[in-house]
Amino acid sequence: MDEQELKRILEAAMLAAARPLSIDQLLEIFPEEGRPERNEIRSALAVLEEECAQRGVELKEVSSGFRFQVKTEYASWVSKLWEERPPRYSRALLETLALVAYRQPITRAEIEDIRGVVVSTNIIKTLQDRNWVRIVGHRDVPGRPALFATTKEFLDYFGLKSLDELPTLAELRDLDAINAELELPLPLGEDEGAPPAVAETELADADSEQNDEPDAGADKTPAVAAEH
Image 1 (cartoon, rainbow, N blue to C red):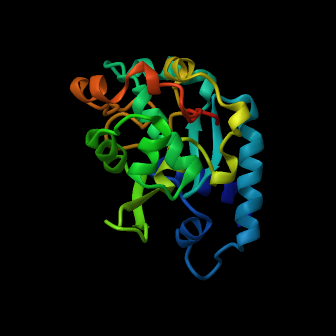
Image 2 (cartoon, helix red, strand yellow):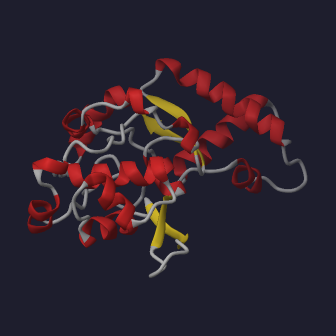
């Protein structure tokens, strides 16, 4: 099989998939006899990535594998294909997610100590329902509180390969600016409604937000930036 044919097969597979595909998963689409080597797959993917330089889409490696996605600068146009505009993320949710990402593993009480306010159950539930945060253990103290950490889905959604790619604290921007700009690259091949960048964002309900977000605690923690 020549490189051009290999590229076309890989491109078709990634466009058809509703999720990122790892090298192992890409290898599995070929029969054992005549299956390309891993380095051949990586080489073909590198060429595909280069070929996307002048296109509206890019080949991106995230935590779970490789996917084609709309480039960030074109997300605002593509998002108009979906009728409903996504609700914005709340400041409290972003602050909580940021603390889990940067201080993990971390307990709910530790998040509350840093933020200076109570973290609503609805925010924790939203982060878990989205598979952005999960329980990875329990702190060995009285009550054995749950320890929270981020997931591969969190990395995939924000276009990251690993936690090492998170922006440094010095690079983080204002929460309100992030909220206004949060238009992430749209993964191609989604088959269940709008892709993550324009899918409905579950926020903490209004009552929880009023109780969870007094001005006194609003600036006590960094915000997670949508860097990708």
